[in-house]
Length: 357
Image (cartoon, rainbow, N blue to C red; front, side):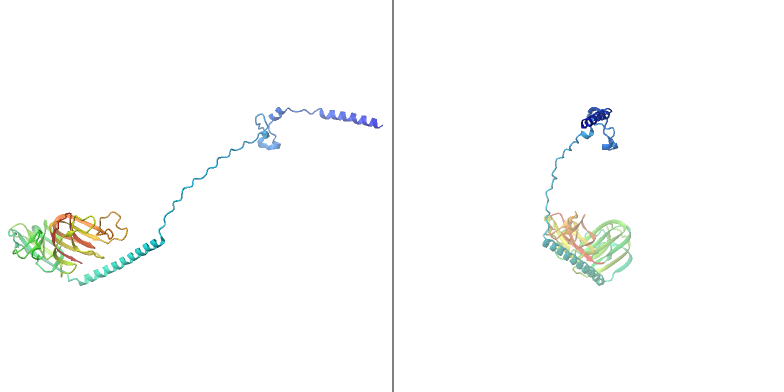
């Protein structure tokens, strides 16, 4: 019986196996690959994608080539030389000290200017009309002269406005000179003994205005015929002092660096607060007018302006006016005033100067 059961079981197994294996068909590998990538395995985005003769899943991803590492270029550090703290501190201290000194100087200048104004003599203003006479100066016998302000030991400084009947020249006298002081400058003398240096301005006009300084004031022509002049003049008659002078001096070698071959006649020496005034002069040769401004603070002298310095340390800004004349008048302001030549031989100048209003 056991034998029969085994035969039946074996027979059924064979039949069942034939039934199952009949519909199965093995697909060749090439065809399977040609169907693409199953979307169930790799997602809907891979449906229908064929990677040549292989499944995309069989394609090994390319390895990215590693880029060679570059070492960043390091710029060498340049160490800034720091100023020593002590030196910087000292510089700040010096600048502060100089600033405070300048404020004090400015205050003193303002107070001095107010004092100078209150101590000035009253201003005289007058108007007149006069007719000229024969010029009494030796060598001027064929000329005409109208005297506005007569010779005085004091210095006149003021403003003169006029109108005349013909073209005229303006005259200021400086002196009288001491013996031996007439050394080439223009001279006017009534008798050959009393001598005055002469500032002669060839205005050659019938009308004008003149800011003047001198010991006398007049109007002049080169003609023998009299002329008439109407005028107004406002002036102060100043007593001689350190800033009101009438004198004759001889130049010296210019002490400024780079000016060793020049000559300089100092009229008003350097001071901390500025002068304001009028200069009338007569020199033995053509001169240039000089005004100094300063002394300058550190760093102020390096911006291109003309500089005058006696030692390379103390520096002044330089106003240099070349009028190509040996005589004239100058309304000025500055911390020093002088006359100058480009020559190395001395010159003589007679002048009158008065500062203040």
